[in-house]
Length: 253
Length: 350
Image 1 (cartoon, rainbow over the protein chains, first blue to last red):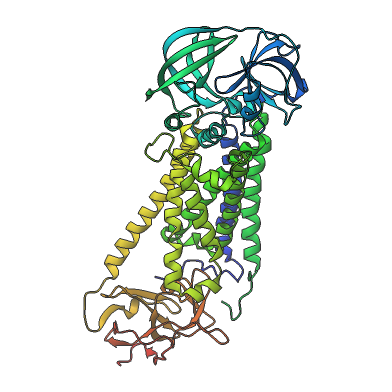
Image 2 (tube, helix red, strand yellow):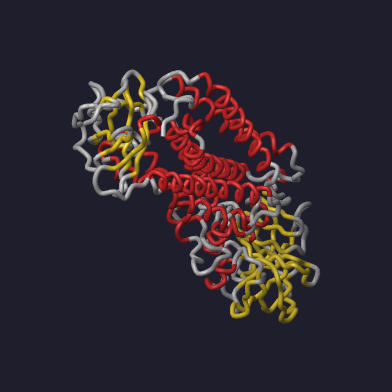
């Protein structure tokens, strides 16, 4: 029902005097409310961690022996100030790509690797430059590195893409990041398992398929979730490699 | 009201409405993106692309929530009707904010691979069989395309072209779109947050939308019960003494139609309660310059024939009236839109 005592607003006419106070109050409440929500939500952002591209280190060039897990690794023989000899470095290409096509011909050989380092605590990875400047055969005697089996382990934690986790993205893990992580893993970027409990001193493990293959597709459904899994763990220098058994994957609450 | 279509028929109230809306949105984004990070003690900042996407996504959610609260709020208290007047501009602005949010997401999370980023959006996560890790992006895609559709068809040209009932049905898609946004947020960012401030605001916002719609529906239901008539012949509306000059009484007929009975200059006339523009409740308007004026957008009609004044062309149905003593009775059979009906003088039998 229309009401004689109610102020009547018509859009193309000046607002009735009786409504102006209320409308002004609504405008103030709306503007200050949005600013307040912006503040409340802005300060509620979780810390993304300290992972980052270390462009501040400058381009890193080291030499070592290429190994395939099948994800390419470099067992460093001639390091530098940032990457010491004896370190095992995971290698990735630019963006969500890998360097396998360049690493496979150099498997077991000495190679020089150049690129930018990603670092998050004790986890690191190198984004290798494009072409031969990034990965090329090097002269010298090839040392023999051992791989130490550490037996079968049952672990709890999260499967991540190692590059985003190491700092390519901040934040670089979690369910909101799952599609991005899957896309990296489809690009054969090295996957990393973040264990809730350290394994032989390390909470980060490069994770592969059970038979020396890539991460199996069935594992993609478990990426970014809190899971338990079993697998054979081996030590390659200061890097642990987990050959997961996909049949043991379970989501934990 | 218009006789030709132009992008926006600006007037001072629309300028004020849009200025307040833009100021609110600008402040939200400024505070989220530039003021709040100074308060945080993060060792390294969130990537700017992710930060921007979060700010724009949160802003779009808050804007959509406010938009959906306006309708029921105006039904509960007509003093809030001015907020409804230019709501479509609010909706279009929300779509721009949502598109920018989606742009940051696609250009960040789904870029940098050898695949097309839009294809990657669809195939990167296919875990549709599980709740945790469900590809929440699809809810966002549905909501975004729906909002774009609604914004693109928001102009009066489309309402005329599609006809008001079809247009109205299409625009009810706002509710599935909002539910989809709720799912997008619930399966996405809410799964990852350690700080639950957004969870509280999100649940509060969604509950406000649901609660206000429920309260408005209950109020209308109560009002409809009081207005309903099951009578097949002439339907009693009210006593003449209850009517005020320039204002209406509404009657809900057995067929679900509503009639607005106006007293104008000592004579009674009846028209459909539904405005030809957006079904606004004409019976809740009033007569200005001898014309019934819709409370939603100010469309006007001659109360005797249901026609908008020249050069406008809108027409609504009229109804026949008679009085029985002091009782006002309406014939429930509507006349074709634009039919003249001789007004019934108050006190004169007809």
